[in-house]
Length: 91
Image (cartoon, rainbow, N blue to C red; front, top):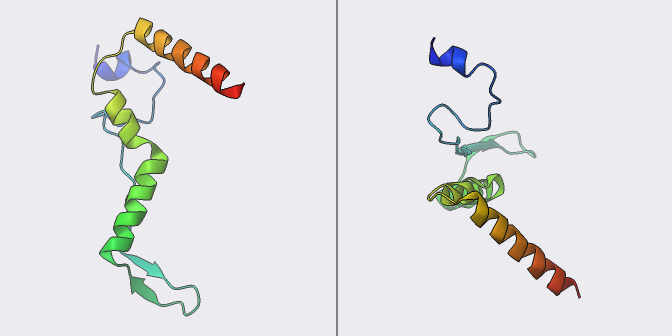
């Protein structure tokens, strides 16, 4: 059997085949709404936009989370700790 047939029933996540999520790209040109002209963006503006898109897509958070294995018991323990902290902060 090929690998393709083995994975036919699995749900696919947002990951590509190489397990690297696609980063949001930033274009260097845009169309000015007032004049309709095509203009080029500054490098600083493109960097700000790229950082904002990466932050919104949570790519770095997921990358850091996958850096090391976290056992299910550690996940449960962290979830309980966070829930207790939320309960205390609400009061």
